[in-house]
Image: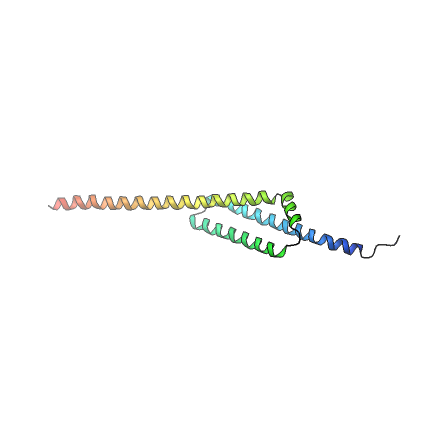
Length: 140
């Protein structure tokens, strides 16, 4: 039986979108893992570093998903199934959860610093009145 001419080409042509989709999913998984690891290290960072980290992660996600949306329109169903198989949806949710924790840390640390500054201003104001009042009454 002679080989089927063009069959390999047809197989390759039909497999190419699947291979591209698989490659994009692997890249997405790697990117999400990197962001997840970076966000897991957040407790040791100051407010400015946390804000910068959050900005970098959000910008990175926006850039990646924007590129993915414009470059991969041929296989929505395959992509959805691949995301489930590779655990990308769970990983994405973990990154979003960590981003929320970073936001909470930023808010909490900012509030703590604001409260500390307010307490110091109150103490200084009160200290100046007491010292000023005692000093001025001593002169009378």
